[in-house]
Figure 1 (cartoon, rainbow, N blue to C red):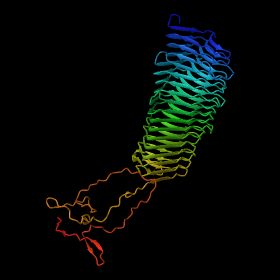
Figure 2: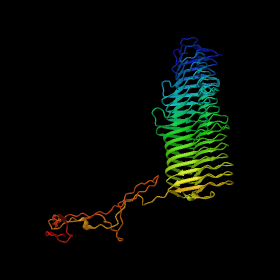
Figure 3: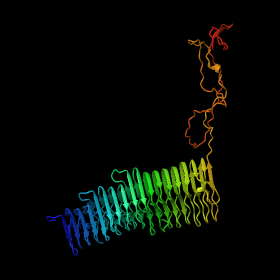
Length: 632
């Protein structure tokens, strides 16, 4: 601006401000700056462009508040058909507040040819925070519509980024492209996406090589509010990109708050394979709210859903949050993804859920939990299921301890084959307050199998906590339990108001319940003790000891010497309690019995035989010695 703080650019009726190149020369840059505010308005365009072999220049917008409205566009475009390794022009926005309004308004870094598109970046203007308002369908986009590589979209601020409104921030490869879509990176301490805003990395291409870009969030706190979404997906033949959420900088913790109706997803609705959803932090991840994190295959897809992986020391899922790997497809090839949790401590509470499921003809994926302590309480569920015709997946849990307190582990199906549940627990399983472990099948499906290995399995008989593998028209599943002790649960042919173990079927054959109770021999490993009392005379030397000043000698023996305890004496023990684990294989360890050896005593004299042989001899102990020493 001229001697001012604000600048307004009015581009009416298709007017354009452009810096371009049509040959091998480098295009020029376009710089717009003002201390307080820049407003670009009207149905025109501010752009840098290349249609030749040379790279386009850059667009640089620097101000405290940037407004683009009423259909105005800021773009960096490559239309050249010649292949080049140089990226096209980039767009750099330095502004603390960016306001975009109008369904054609926006910031666009794109390639329509063979050249790679440039990047599009937004960061604060001399500040710590960045706010982006996207109204009336406005868009911030890095895209490819041809064979060129799409550009990256980067949003960063030291403290906070807020993206709000019913617009879109995206990196895409469109239906006719063969180039790979660019990536999206959001990097800040606190990221908030609100009021219907959509952030995505996607591909809609029919060309399998035009895979979707990756979406990465690096933040300590992620908040999604009011029907907002984060997604990496495919609607075409190409595979979707991955979605990764991790701490900002060197942070150790991650908190994700999902309000009702918000989603974080890696999805497919076409023939392409869905991407992976990865959530990780070194110390802890806390996921709360009524929103959903999911890797999904939609109804029309033929590509399989991606996997979900959560990895941290302590994972808490609370307040109704749902984490899912699922398929809704009617195509049997669009199988559900797998959901894996790796955490030293895993807590599910407040009607939250982990699930790998199917609602269509495709099979559901598997759900695996690898943890030290697993707690499922207050109505929370861990589920592999099928509500369609597809088979349910398997639920596998490897843990030291498992607490179900009004919690459920479920592998159920409406009509397909029931899923299996396998629990490998080093220590104990405790079920309280109507908890449930179920591999139930509906209609013609057969019940799944349940395999539990734990040192101890405990429940309160009157609290109706059940382990079931039931069926309706099909056969009941099998339940196999290996334990040292099971308390409070009993096998019953049908479920009752008590705590039951059941594998029944309403119209088919009942399943089999097998309880393998380990028997431990308490005498194994004990040291064999002598049965004969100790003879004190054998412990006394046969010579004269040096007398003490009072003319007495002394003899001390420690222990009971094999004599039993007097029944009138108090009992005591110096034994130590060892934490013994049951051996994996019994072996015989019989103690050997030593042959008695000849007693050797000290010689007290000698004799000479008729053959002139010297023989050492010892006299029988007496109360006085041959030399006049008296023993007292």
